[in-house]
Length: 427
Ligand code: NSS
Image 1 (cartoon, protein in one colour):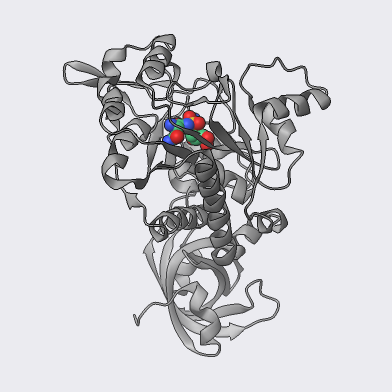
Image 2 (cartoon, helix red, strand yellow):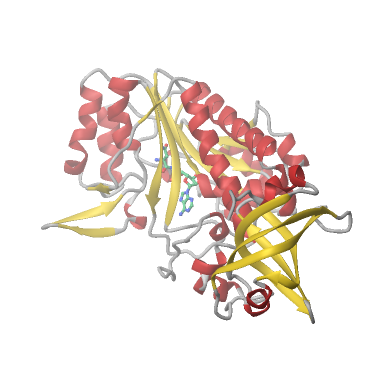
């Protein structure tokens, strides 16, 4: 067959011959005629195969999701959803499909069991294209600003975000953990590279089954020497705004197909509003929530807070005792730390966690002990403070959380091809 084009190329071929290949998305017909909706990675188009066309009998036999190659003539048709149809002259079935196990309106459980087949659905394909754009935009953002991309190990000896969500693995004769964050290694690497980032999987043995937790998620993290809280907040709001803008520019069609109202996304520009933890607590109380000051926010509290904002915003200066050991004690108030969570609006909540890093070895040691961790595992980390420590800050963005909000999805599992959650490791 001649050189294959893509469905997206069709508008340039009105009245002309075209060769396409893809999968049969839908099929129906009556005597002497078959209507096949052909799908490739760029879109769908209805193809009409009439009796007499080469391969008509195979077109009748081929069930949905069979793969095909075809030749035909592009016909403009105002009634067709895409404005075009293809009159097929020749069709070859490359792979006949068996009865496809997924039908309309299937339960979420079945769709997860059949994830290896459901990943070809139009919905997931649209989300994955947006996801791809998000990854590309994150790289572009950091590289444009002179950051170096650098990786850290996934197998580690000590916790970064507390022991309760660590996955334990056998490491020859030792015990190791899957990483929760690159951060501790990143803090060592800035002494050579100053401004660094990575996008890598992080692992959390989350026992809570929620709509926004994965056991394995992609973490975009940055660490920067010589900056404080102002610097890191700026970087975060610029990053989120940049990514959202890129998705709007390049993936408007997919957002529309997903039914996303883009008005709210169009507002995402710096600066983002900032409130302190204390102000957030006051807001919750005013809204009638019975919230005990000093606790961390859960999704219920975050949801209520997001009602007050129509774009992402920061909550800063959380109580020291509920936050990680590496966060810098506030110089103005030793009971709080210089940290921030960035929340997405519309009920989505936390997408970023960041902080200025503690430099005092004594305070770090005290915090590590308070967390009940063994300081021995952190000796190398404390060395970073002994040899030319500088002020520095960084943050971690949950890429699936961001994709979930940008796409307006109600569950995080549909932002990633093969989600890992507590009760699912297959397929
Ligand atoms: O625990 S975090 O709040 N912070 C850190 O890991 C820091 N060490 C990052 C840093 O400063 N380099 O996680 C960061 C973000 C959080 O805001 C969420 O968006 C996301 O990572 N996150 C998750 N996404 C999906 N599933 C799970 N389980 C999850 N946990 C955190």
